[in-house]
Length: 239
Image (cartoon, rainbow, N blue to C red; front, side, top):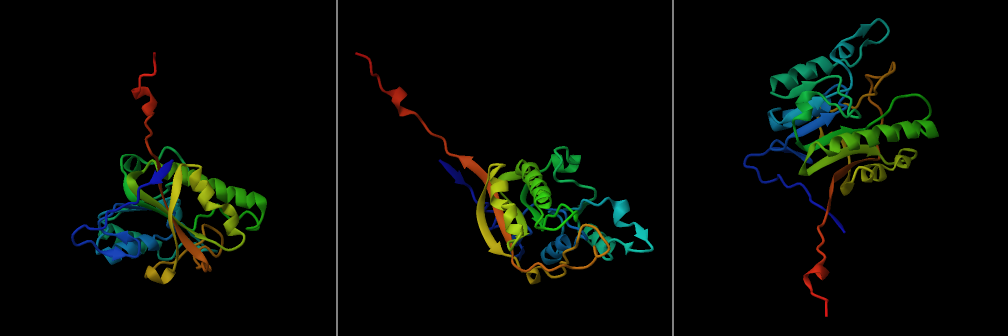
Protein backbone atom coordinates (compact mmCIF):
# COMPACT_ATOMS: atom_id res chain seq x y z
CA UNK A 1 0.00 0.00 0.00
CA UNK A 2 1.27 3.46 -0.88
CA UNK A 3 0.26 6.88 0.32
CA UNK A 4 1.35 10.41 -0.41
CA UNK A 5 1.93 13.34 1.89
CA UNK A 6 0.71 16.68 0.57
CA UNK A 7 2.90 19.69 1.27
CA UNK A 8 1.46 22.03 3.89
CA UNK A 9 3.47 25.19 4.34
CA UNK A 10 0.37 27.33 4.09
CA UNK A 11 -0.03 29.02 7.45
CA UNK A 12 3.17 31.03 7.63
CA UNK A 13 2.45 34.45 9.10
CA UNK A 14 2.44 37.19 6.50
CA UNK A 15 2.99 34.87 3.54
CA UNK A 16 2.09 36.30 0.15
CA UNK A 17 0.60 34.07 -2.52
CA UNK A 18 0.57 33.84 -6.29
CA UNK A 19 -1.66 30.97 -7.37
CA UNK A 20 0.02 27.78 -6.05
CA UNK A 21 3.10 29.50 -4.64
CA UNK A 22 3.87 31.29 -1.40
CA UNK A 23 6.64 33.62 -0.28
CA UNK A 24 7.12 31.27 2.69
CA UNK A 25 8.06 28.37 0.42
CA UNK A 26 11.55 27.68 -0.86
CA UNK A 27 11.05 27.54 -4.63
CA UNK A 28 13.33 26.36 -7.42
CA UNK A 29 12.33 27.30 -10.97
CA UNK A 30 14.16 25.45 -13.74
CA UNK A 31 14.28 26.04 -17.48
CA UNK A 32 13.00 29.61 -17.12
CA UNK A 33 14.14 30.93 -20.52
CA UNK A 34 14.03 34.70 -19.96
CA UNK A 35 13.46 34.38 -16.18
CA UNK A 36 10.04 36.04 -16.49
CA UNK A 37 8.16 33.36 -14.54
CA UNK A 38 10.57 33.68 -11.63
CA UNK A 39 10.28 37.46 -11.75
CA UNK A 40 6.49 37.19 -11.69
CA UNK A 41 6.73 35.20 -8.44
CA UNK A 42 9.29 37.54 -6.85
CA UNK A 43 7.24 40.61 -7.78
CA UNK A 44 4.09 39.13 -6.24
CA UNK A 45 5.97 38.18 -3.08
CA UNK A 46 7.79 41.51 -2.84
CA UNK A 47 11.01 39.54 -2.41
CA UNK A 48 13.08 36.84 -4.02
CA UNK A 49 14.73 35.68 -0.81
CA UNK A 50 13.33 32.12 -1.01
CA UNK A 51 13.58 31.82 -4.78
CA UNK A 52 16.21 30.14 -6.96
CA UNK A 53 15.79 30.86 -10.68
CA UNK A 54 17.71 28.84 -13.26
CA UNK A 55 17.99 28.35 -16.99
CA UNK A 56 19.85 25.96 -19.26
CA UNK A 57 21.52 28.83 -21.11
CA UNK A 58 24.87 30.03 -19.84
CA UNK A 59 25.21 33.72 -19.06
CA UNK A 60 27.43 34.14 -22.13
CA UNK A 61 24.80 32.57 -24.39
CA UNK A 62 22.03 34.62 -22.79
CA UNK A 63 24.03 37.77 -23.51
CA UNK A 64 25.27 36.65 -26.94
CA UNK A 65 24.33 38.94 -29.81
CA UNK A 66 24.22 38.09 -33.51
CA UNK A 67 23.32 40.24 -36.46
CA UNK A 68 20.57 37.80 -37.43
CA UNK A 69 18.97 37.18 -34.06
CA UNK A 70 20.10 39.98 -31.77
CA UNK A 71 20.19 39.01 -28.09
CA UNK A 72 18.45 35.66 -27.54
CA UNK A 73 15.81 36.96 -25.13
CA UNK A 74 15.31 40.71 -25.15
CA UNK A 75 14.22 41.02 -21.52
CA UNK A 76 16.38 38.31 -19.96
CA UNK A 77 19.20 40.48 -18.65
CA UNK A 78 16.88 43.09 -17.15
CA UNK A 79 14.82 40.30 -15.57
CA UNK A 80 17.97 38.78 -14.07
CA UNK A 81 19.07 42.15 -12.70
CA UNK A 82 15.68 42.73 -11.09
CA UNK A 83 15.61 39.23 -9.58
CA UNK A 84 19.04 39.74 -8.07
CA UNK A 85 18.03 43.14 -6.75
CA UNK A 86 15.07 41.48 -5.01
CA UNK A 87 17.31 38.91 -3.35
CA UNK A 88 16.73 35.89 -5.60
CA UNK A 89 19.50 33.46 -6.47
CA UNK A 90 20.00 33.30 -10.25
CA UNK A 91 21.94 30.45 -11.83
CA UNK A 92 22.87 29.87 -15.48
CA UNK A 93 23.81 26.72 -17.37
CA UNK A 94 21.82 24.39 -15.10
CA UNK A 95 20.97 21.07 -16.78
CA UNK A 96 18.31 19.41 -14.63
CA UNK A 97 18.83 16.02 -16.22
CA UNK A 98 22.35 15.76 -14.82
CA UNK A 99 22.98 14.07 -11.51
CA UNK A 100 25.85 16.43 -10.57
CA UNK A 101 24.12 19.80 -10.07
CA UNK A 102 25.93 22.98 -8.98
CA UNK A 103 27.00 22.83 -5.34
CA UNK A 104 24.48 25.51 -4.36
CA UNK A 105 21.67 23.19 -5.48
CA UNK A 106 23.25 19.99 -4.19
CA UNK A 107 23.14 21.28 -0.62
CA UNK A 108 19.53 22.53 -0.66
CA UNK A 109 16.05 21.08 -0.44
CA UNK A 110 12.95 22.88 -1.71
CA UNK A 111 9.24 23.07 -0.97
CA UNK A 112 8.45 23.48 -4.67
CA UNK A 113 10.38 22.72 -7.85
CA UNK A 114 8.78 24.15 -11.00
CA UNK A 115 9.42 23.24 -14.64
CA UNK A 116 7.11 24.99 -17.11
CA UNK A 117 6.65 23.61 -20.60
CA UNK A 118 9.67 21.28 -20.83
CA UNK A 119 10.91 20.73 -24.38
CA UNK A 120 13.89 18.83 -25.77
CA UNK A 121 14.42 21.06 -28.83
CA UNK A 122 13.23 21.35 -32.39
CA UNK A 123 14.59 18.38 -34.29
CA UNK A 124 11.44 17.24 -36.04
CA UNK A 125 7.65 17.26 -35.94
CA UNK A 126 6.10 17.12 -32.48
CA UNK A 127 4.19 13.94 -33.37
CA UNK A 128 7.37 12.19 -34.53
CA UNK A 129 8.11 9.15 -32.37
CA UNK A 130 11.79 10.06 -32.06
CA UNK A 131 10.93 13.59 -30.91
CA UNK A 132 8.41 12.29 -28.39
CA UNK A 133 11.05 9.92 -27.04
CA UNK A 134 13.52 12.80 -26.66
CA UNK A 135 10.94 14.86 -24.78
CA UNK A 136 10.17 11.92 -22.52
CA UNK A 137 13.83 11.39 -21.72
CA UNK A 138 14.15 15.06 -20.77
CA UNK A 139 11.19 14.91 -18.41
CA UNK A 140 12.18 11.52 -17.00
CA UNK A 141 15.66 12.85 -16.27
CA UNK A 142 14.18 15.93 -14.61
CA UNK A 143 11.96 13.85 -12.31
CA UNK A 144 14.89 11.63 -11.38
CA UNK A 145 16.95 14.76 -10.61
CA UNK A 146 14.23 16.65 -8.74
CA UNK A 147 12.93 13.81 -6.60
CA UNK A 148 15.86 13.98 -4.21
CA UNK A 149 15.76 17.77 -3.94
CA UNK A 150 12.40 18.35 -2.30
CA UNK A 151 11.42 18.07 1.34
CA UNK A 152 9.35 14.98 2.24
CA UNK A 153 6.19 17.09 1.97
CA UNK A 154 7.40 19.07 -1.05
CA UNK A 155 5.98 19.11 -4.56
CA UNK A 156 7.31 19.00 -8.11
CA UNK A 157 5.23 20.99 -10.60
CA UNK A 158 5.34 20.47 -14.37
CA UNK A 159 3.18 22.60 -16.65
CA UNK A 160 2.50 20.78 -19.89
CA UNK A 161 0.21 20.86 -22.91
CA UNK A 162 -2.50 18.23 -22.76
CA UNK A 163 -3.70 18.18 -26.38
CA UNK A 164 -2.36 15.95 -29.17
CA UNK A 165 0.45 15.00 -29.49
CA UNK A 166 1.69 16.22 -26.11
CA UNK A 167 -0.51 13.91 -24.06
CA UNK A 168 1.42 11.00 -25.60
CA UNK A 169 4.39 11.96 -23.41
CA UNK A 170 2.41 10.47 -20.50
CA UNK A 171 3.73 12.81 -17.80
CA UNK A 172 2.16 10.81 -14.98
CA UNK A 173 3.90 7.60 -16.06
CA UNK A 174 7.25 9.39 -16.33
CA UNK A 175 6.77 10.69 -12.78
CA UNK A 176 5.78 7.26 -11.51
CA UNK A 177 9.06 5.87 -12.88
CA UNK A 178 10.78 8.04 -10.24
CA UNK A 179 8.37 7.02 -7.46
CA UNK A 180 6.40 10.26 -7.71
CA UNK A 181 2.62 10.29 -7.41
CA UNK A 182 0.12 12.79 -8.76
CA UNK A 183 -1.31 15.11 -6.11
CA UNK A 184 -3.35 17.36 -8.37
CA UNK A 185 -3.78 18.47 -11.97
CA UNK A 186 -5.08 22.00 -12.53
CA UNK A 187 -5.56 24.20 -15.61
CA UNK A 188 -2.73 26.65 -16.27
CA UNK A 189 -3.61 30.24 -17.16
CA UNK A 190 -0.77 32.54 -18.14
CA UNK A 191 -2.76 35.54 -16.90
CA UNK A 192 -2.32 34.27 -13.35
CA UNK A 193 1.37 35.17 -13.61
CA UNK A 194 1.67 38.83 -14.68
CA UNK A 195 4.73 39.45 -16.82
CA UNK A 196 5.35 35.80 -17.66
CA UNK A 197 6.31 35.20 -21.29
CA UNK A 198 6.95 31.61 -22.36
CA UNK A 199 9.92 31.31 -24.74
CA UNK A 200 11.23 28.76 -27.23
CA UNK A 201 14.59 27.23 -26.41
CA UNK A 202 16.24 28.13 -29.72
CA UNK A 203 15.67 29.17 -33.31
CA UNK A 204 14.97 32.51 -34.96
CA UNK A 205 11.63 32.79 -33.14
CA UNK A 206 13.08 32.02 -29.71
CA UNK A 207 12.09 35.44 -28.29
CA UNK A 208 8.49 35.11 -29.45
CA UNK A 209 5.67 33.71 -27.37
CA UNK A 210 3.96 30.55 -28.52
CA UNK A 211 0.42 29.23 -27.92
CA UNK A 212 -0.08 27.47 -24.59
CA UNK A 213 -3.79 26.79 -24.57
CA UNK A 214 -4.91 23.47 -23.10
CA UNK A 215 -2.10 23.43 -20.54
CA UNK A 216 -2.25 21.98 -17.05
CA UNK A 217 0.04 22.10 -14.05
CA UNK A 218 0.73 18.58 -12.81
CA UNK A 219 1.66 18.48 -9.12
CA UNK A 220 3.65 15.49 -7.88
CA UNK A 221 4.96 14.36 -4.53
CA UNK A 222 7.16 11.53 -3.35
CA UNK A 223 5.33 8.28 -2.87
CA UNK A 224 5.57 7.05 0.71
CA UNK A 225 5.41 3.33 1.36
CA UNK A 226 3.38 2.56 4.46
CA UNK A 227 5.14 0.34 6.95
CA UNK A 228 3.60 -3.10 7.50
CA UNK A 229 4.10 -5.29 10.53
CA UNK A 230 3.96 -9.07 10.44
CA UNK A 231 2.08 -9.87 13.64
CA UNK A 232 2.41 -13.63 13.12
CA UNK A 233 5.85 -13.53 14.73
CA UNK A 234 4.26 -12.40 18.00
CA UNK A 235 2.34 -15.65 18.49
CA UNK A 236 3.81 -18.90 19.76
CA UNK A 237 2.67 -21.75 17.53
CA UNK A 238 4.67 -24.63 19.01
CA UNK A 239 3.17 -27.60 20.83
